[in-house]
Image 1 (tube, rainbow, N blue to C red):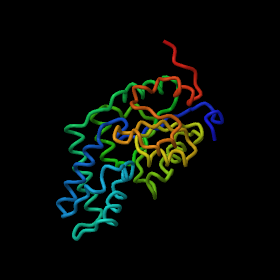
Image 2 (cartoon, rainbow, N blue to C red):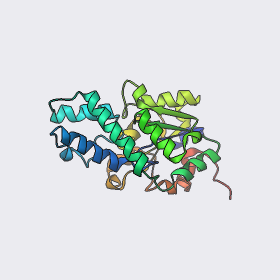
Image 3 (cartoon, one colour):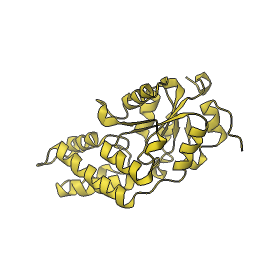
Length: 233
């Protein structure tokens, strides 16, 4: 399906971690610390984006399958990671450039705006509370409510259904490759804003538009992707 085959967008679905808020460094540092306490070195598997966009339980299972450890259950390890992330968000997290402006821009086009995150509700709530963003989303979805997380499309399909909008009328904004794959599997348009470490990854060609920052969201290629008229000054 080409961009010209899509109807005008009616909804925009935002990822959270690494797109709106700069939490990815905290996820990495907390995960390294938690696993180090178990005697497990996960650093050889970091830096390739393999777990970006995945739910925390799936991340823990990913590392156990490859590295293994004795002691705490996967659920306990996941709880330790979530606790560390929530603390880091409340103390130190910052919004990424263009985050609030991008929400305002798409809402100004008349699109319904939703959040669809692989994070657990406590992590999502910590971000929304810290930055006062809760009222900006018509729907907030966590992948913990789905049997499978990204790259499975379940969270995006469920979010579209809650919005009352057909999947092909949605545009997804994502920073992770797993998220882009999930959105395309849902037959949605995708604007990718990859972390600068992965900006040259050819696999992001799956996205319809690739930006280096949300600050570029008002550019003509995005407007064309949405099938909307440019904003008037």
